[in-house]
Length: 290
Image (cartoon, rainbow, N blue to C red; front, side, top):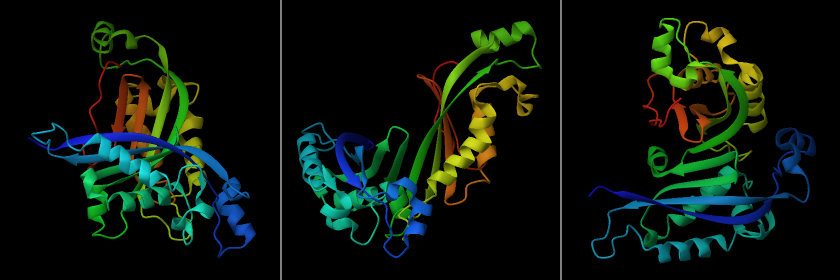
């Protein structure tokens, strides 16, 4: 049997402050904004831990869930309801950004063989921001600090009509169904950046700069618009596939720090698109109708 992946989710609450001691107050404020406010601020974090392995023939499990839960409770005891800058030993020489917190948790969890092979750690700061570290990226760094993936989500609403000028009215109805008529969606766009964590800032990209680029190039252009009137859809249907590829093209050369790895687009609860650019790995399959 091939390996099976098991993911356990656990929540904890913690406070932190972004502050670089080597900088003056002006630079700290310019780089970190409100996250530099004293004495700090807090989040309800959600941690997802994925382990992988063969299914044990006796227990029928990849790992004993009791053991995994016990390890996570023990590890998070140092973080839960703590001020990470002041109450933990891990952030004396680095800023407790979401990236660095995930790196610390990854490093700690790799020391527990009882939980099996650690495959991935994903840490949500809130519903629209999470970072991810995986065994694949850890190995790719040759045993050094693994690369981190940061995903930020954005929201916009738009109308469209899935319609091809190359098809007749009947053919459009057959291909696109009800979506050949005008309709609209509340889209959720996820933008994933990959890179190494900067030693000074503790981040892989400038999030306010990323927000500005996404809002300026994507959200402002598409939000509360009819996509069929967008010039980039003058010769192609306004499908989720084409929209996701367009968003990639709008962002690919505009990311100031880190590398754009993928964009995802939720069109409906049962329909998600993902695009990684030409020549990259195939995107995850989507399900459902348009």
